[in-house]
Image 1 (cartoon, rainbow, N blue to C red):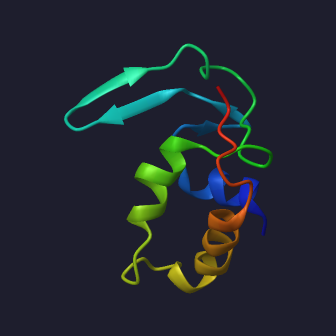
Image 2: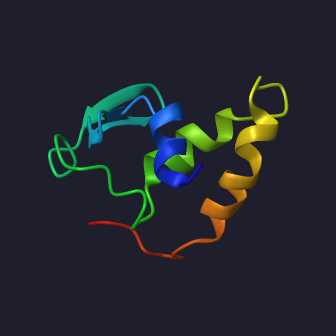
Length: 85
């Protein structure tokens, strides 16, 4: 498994390799036109949605926690401060 497969399995924005661009801030959702319909870039760049929403949801209570944990740790170490604009 790699970080792209992790996004495919866990991210609700991931749709057959493209990003839906839906962002959540507190109680409202917005659509980011810069991301919508674009190829998922998680294998090359960091993703705020993935970091702020997806990763925190994978706790020890998650049924696949032990499978995902090493890849989440690996993702957390890659490409520091390298966010796609």
